[in-house]
Length: 443
Image 1 (tube, one colour):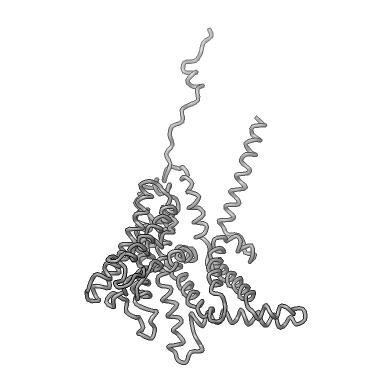
Image 2: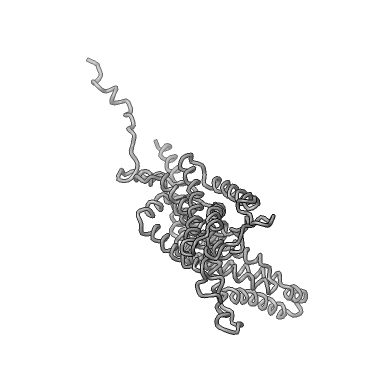
């Protein structure tokens, strides 16, 4: 008797695939992080050796530019084959003179008559570094959350707007006026940055587009306010500038009137650096921020509220940029400010954060370095060296840091573990189609 086994048709039918869970403790791999996060991680994982080599290589290129623009070098190169020693001596004098002026104008002036004059360049560098560090910490914190915050400029300007109403409209004793103004600036920057985080969390809009737009809004809002009588424009003038910062709202000098560029704002920035380090490296909030920055999909699977972290990160980033604005208004620029109160610090902060690998103390050190370069550039300019060369050096540092394989190729360094792993993955990916094809042919 012929027949079929009961249930044979069902057995022959392919079984339905049940949905598979993903996430921790499920045995499934976490989803791949977005490409932007991968790129950011590769930049931030560079070693200290890579950073040092980037600075050295940028200085070498800067030395070449100094030599090429020096008049003595150009004159002596006309008869280089007749007397090559003259050209080489001119090159040495130009490069040595340029970098000696950089050190003399930023760290130690051995030509000064007294000790105060000798160390004044260092205090000037620290004064220039304070707002760079504060804004850089804001950018770095956002980087650690996987957010590319290029809105530090707008956050600084909005902090300046908020602080201006407390600075110029209140007549209070210093112990109240100074912290009130500072907190107003921090709150203004935090709200402006938090708005970006909120819009990204709610709509998914990209933070780069949002911060570009908020930069423009903050700039033109400030420009309108300092051109409008009765708002922020100084009384008795048609110029777009505010009134001077009252003495009761200014940071006192840290080491006395002999060092006017260094004030208590620098100590506040040091304290903020400690706070940011603790938040990122020691607190549960910092753990969540870092987890979201590594892979937001995996962080979401682990139960972290990614949207809330985006808002928190941008709130903190904006507040730190607002503190940078307070270093300007209450410290460096007390005679009244205009629409350029940010002085390019908002964009330099991106460079500082990248150079510091988005670590708190790395950003602090990078801010000091850029303060040194900025302070020393004035002495270099007095030597007849174009100040733009310093800007080129800063840009080259970032370029080399963003391309570690280029540095390793130039200095013949071994590949990093990440590069070796990436190469191995690429080879494995190439083998898979070949193996699949081979199995199909044999079948």
